[in-house]
Image (cartoon, rainbow, N blue to C red):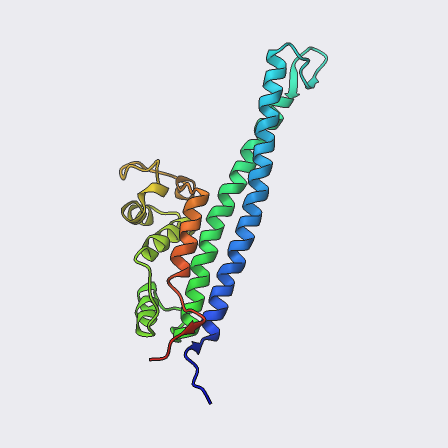
Length: 206
């Protein structure tokens, strides 16, 4: 019998497949929302050009001639809500990714549910799992989104300042969740960081 040249890990397989499923869902949802946003932006631009060209406005007015609503306001509202939905998707995705990593490390190493991040890192390294040096930045990002406090904002400012573009280290915010802005590319970076910080399906035996 020929000896296998690799070892298979169920935990690694489940972790990597989970990452793949999250990525596919994120891409599909992002594409749909971004397409809807672009369509509304085009409609708004076309409507503004129509009005500037002397076209008739679309809307509703009361008997005294006061405007109740018009198409420009409606489209602007759609653009705002869709933009908020896109940002909410990005933030919820990075939270889901980090939690997926936590559960995978606990399952593959046996660290109890109340184990801290440092215990997860130590256990993972002890099992030969590579950890991206950028995982700490992801942890700070997720904890700021979850706990919404200045302590994590300062940590994130040090580890990943680009996602806190409106924070100068001195300003006070009542809503730290809103202080975070994530691009699609930055979410893709988180996918890469998390994917390379967990167990893999196959490894070569020692």
